[in-house]
Length: 198
Length: 198
DNA sequence: GGGTAATCTAGAACACGTTCCAGCGTGGCG
DNA sequence: CGCCACGCTGGAACGTGTTCTAGATTACCC
Image (cartoon, rainbow over all chains, first blue to last red; front, side, top):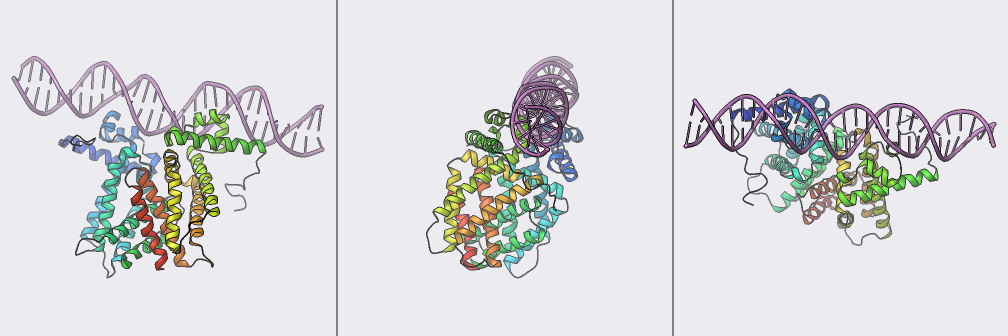
């Protein structure tokens, strides 16, 4: 385990960091315009000004690239939410509101959201570490919104998991046009009831 | 709306019905052996004894094909469950047990499950009708397990939705190796608490 | 049974994700 | 300064999902 498949990210030079950002930015831009299928590896490479091989050195697949994009976006949401937490008495309501706010953030760029979420759910085991990272950020977002003063109980953690499942699946359902935003809100609120009951 | 994109399925001849079954059977067989990526359209066509163009006439994409396979499998589970419903007093526990039984059914062919679920979550809007059908069967499975004597209340329906989200997302999480079966059970049981609380 | 429209077949062709390779540039070390 | 290791480049090449076409077969109606 000391030599894991992800060998503790050798530190990137400045130029490399810049390349990585350029690639991520390009991917997000293409995704915003045309969704998952519009993110074409050749085009990402060209617009980001790197060779195709280099793109694949940084992100070993299209799915890796888009999951990394999701990480990026989620982290931005998380920072914003930490700066401006939602108000309210009830923890369940705060969680639901926080997730709905994030949801509306994704809604602003629906094609981008589609691309990222498709990648996330299509990811196979080779991407599980990155997907897990996304899951961890989401869970933290929820825990932050709960505003706990002491470590969460076992029941609370269980509820958080179900809320996360609901969030994720509701997102997919909305993106495929099978549920309205109102319905997503209801689903999230329903799941959040688990918090006030445990 | 009278001439919808799916024009009320023109009745298939016997030969056509047989072809369809051969295709579905072949797809399931290949998926069982090697999962999503092992279901290759050329190979499905060849093994099922139809031309590639014909395969695409029956199922307009690989995702359509695998979602149809999922419909097939789910219906089989549903019939089995109706013949042998789970025992128990508590509706929530019955639902959780029923879903876990279905889960174990999928576990018996993990590669097949992977293929079907990947297709399901990767599906875009062009497959939403078929995905919706899968969702309807799953919801019915849950409602059956609840063993209602009168129509479900609004709260119960909301709970069913969250349970369905949880089921679906937990399945994805398990398939990508990020959650154990025990964890899936806990998540389902947590979600099912919503039933006994509404 | 004949005619016709729909369906099926074989196979080429195309698109895009992914892999691979040969050569160039660059940064660090003797 | 020369050299080496490594990353980057441009581009070819491959695999698989998907589309298309020309001709054979089938189903159905008179």
